[in-house]
Length: 311
Image (tube, rainbow, N blue to C red; front, side, top):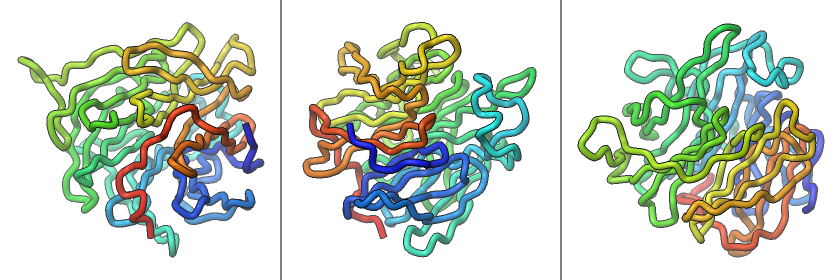
């Protein structure tokens, strides 16, 4: 496992770019940043708040889930209080021109309800995007989270699954038939059958029907994810509380629900993406150590929609 960049301020949301660089967010810095092939870090855009997940859209722009930052005593683990911004500005979906850094807020609410803590995002082949809203934890209450589907024109956003408990990572199976969502605080991954753009199978009821794919052992939590070409769901693992400091890693879960954890030694292993030749290099954000790392992946990764469209 190679360390490609150090001193990153809580990296998340990596995107492997066609030129070999990796674009990611620095949550505690409030930026969208680029790590070039020599490991040099530069700022693409100042986003403010707490940028989290990121993805390339069909127009070549980069779309960012911004969780709005943090306020006093809002993090349930207590880890972020001295590391994250104190001022919460509200959640949003942002669109960034990667050439100029120009940024606009695309969505800040859905059906009159404010977005609380947008977290992770993925585009489907039709050009719409799914994203999670993890919610926020306050001194005595926690917001419910949900899963949303939206268009890039800023005109259509719908709440598809609500409520969920701290929904975080989100991914789509290689054939486009299954949506995966990781819940952080429960350490569980659920799956839903996709029936169309922004549509999930609800059976005879109104709420989309979920199926449990995998649950972690106590003390471990899930973060963000990437699905590879073999259908494995690969998710960042956080180790909190009394768990050993070096027990974070990437949990690789087969479509049948069999799993193993690839250790990274970082208790805040937050996300993974695939790039390089045949998309068979894994790029991993390790946020406790502030590093971007890479290593050869045992299976071929997926070339995500619109990979070649980036400006």
